[in-house]
Figure 1 (tube, rainbow, N blue to C red):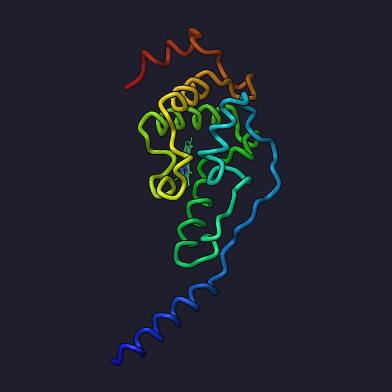
Figure 2: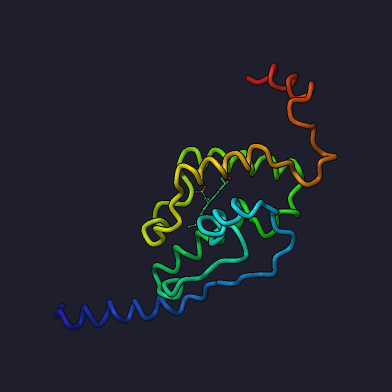
Length: 163
Ligand code: HEC
């Protein structure tokens, strides 16, 4: 095949890719997680693009095929943890998500690495990590009635039976 023809086909494919419909919406916030300002600042900088309805869609969110990854990450991220729909979670779900948050942040798994390539400012410092972890560890879920207070006899009891 002639080189010019191949370039033509590649360009055609690239153009066609742009036509795949993607949903890039920021639905209204319904019950955001309330965090102290210093924690909120870290979440805003490093997490909210994928875990809230306050996504700052970058220009390449309109450039396929990169946009497919961006849109996938945002939808997938929101499905796992959505700080803009925090109060829709039960206390148990909130506790679970906070525990996951501790794990992800301590293991350096969040923010996702490809995101950091394009968002250097989102990288967490050691101090950021410590703040986020201590926030997530001590944060009481909103519907407290569903939860035992920390270090209750019930909790000790549960620990004894962990396998
Ligand atoms: C580029 C998008 C992106 C950014 C930025 C991001 N995440 Fe995520 N996050 C995801 C995706 C996608 C998933 C789900 C898939 C996975 O587990 O890899 C996820 C999953 C999670 C989970 C749930 C893990 C589980 O097993 O259910 C937690 C907790 C989390 N992220 C916390 C954070 C925190 C805290 C930050 C900021 C420090 C952050 N994320 C930044 C995309 C992102």
